[in-house]
Amino acid sequence: MKKLAVITSGGDSPGMNAALFGVVKEAARHEIQVFGCVNGYIGIIKEEFMLLTESELFKVIDIGGTILGTQRFPGFADKDIQTKAVDILRKHEIDGLVVIGGDGSYQGAKALSQLGFPVAAIPGTIDNDIALTDITLGFHTAVENAVDAIDKIKTSAASHKHIFGIEVMGREASDIAIWAGLATAADGIIGTSEDWNLEKVLEGMRSSAGKSQIYILAEGAISAEKFKAEIESHSEFKIHPLVLGHIQRGGKPSVTDRIMGIKFGEKSVETLLAGKSGICLAVHANAIVELELGKVLSSTNKEPFLPY
Ligand code: ADP
Ligand code: F6P
Image 1 (tube, rainbow, N blue to C red):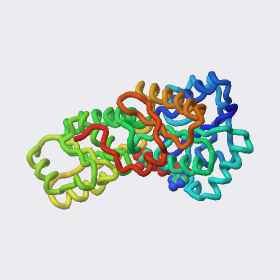
Image 2 (image 1 turned 90 degrees about the vertical axis):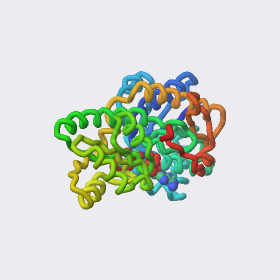
Image 3 (image 1 turned 30 degrees about the vertical axis):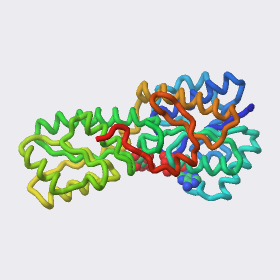
Image 4 (image 1 turned 60 degrees about the vertical axis):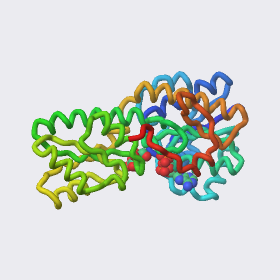
């Protein structure tokens, strides 16, 4: 094995740069060159490759986002485009690909491996919505960011006795909402659309009437705007709606995400060196393990990190 390629794909997540460093570090130990494809799968198709070196990458482990860039490219679901990607990778004498991204990126990774190209995938998403792993890269930092912002909002809310409905990210997953809500002792957490019960929320609001209140809303459950509209049209309460947005994905990766990123990156190279393909990495009880992409993608077993 002489040359590997790596992409960061889907939403950026803190720790992706640390994972790139881990890939390059382990590859260098085996005298393998690593090329980063710019902006995810589209970078392969556009043949936008950049040589990554350990001496450059070690400078970015403390920086959020991804230095390779990432762009949504729905066209990659097309088998002809996937075949073209394999042809391009082979033309550039690339021996294997590391994909860092969420479950959409995993679909692309699985397709490439089914076309016979060696692929290893790293769970890089703030949403913590990949099955069969305790945690995904970036989740820890995103929750810290969310909690930091909510703590600040709470001091203002307390001064004015305001009621806030704060929408956090996570797509259909509720982990960010649950963790951020528990860590800030929120008055309510709406993690899924089944959790949404207007009467119950109003009951809680009435019992704390006159005090500031914070409700954490998973974006896949109910939006801050809808929460405001529902509460205000059925009660006397006034709601301050707030969408935390991309502040959750930004800033410096936590120590956990840096270390996890480096370890994931190193392990992905070991996996490819061992001749395996169609593998994704996961965390099970503090150990990094290899799983089959197909098994993870077909699993519905995605319990929140901590039950609530
Ligand atoms: P994430 O990887 O964070 O879940 P997306 O769902 O946006 O984010 O997926 C990232 C990229 O993965 C997409 O822009 C697309 O290039 C690729 N992708 C998504 N779904 C598929 C699919 N079904 N088949 C092949 N590639 C896919
Ligand atoms: O998948 C990560 C994520 O931040 C989700 O939590 C959110 O729904 C989505 O990406 C936002 O995507 P964009 O940055 O394209 O608006």
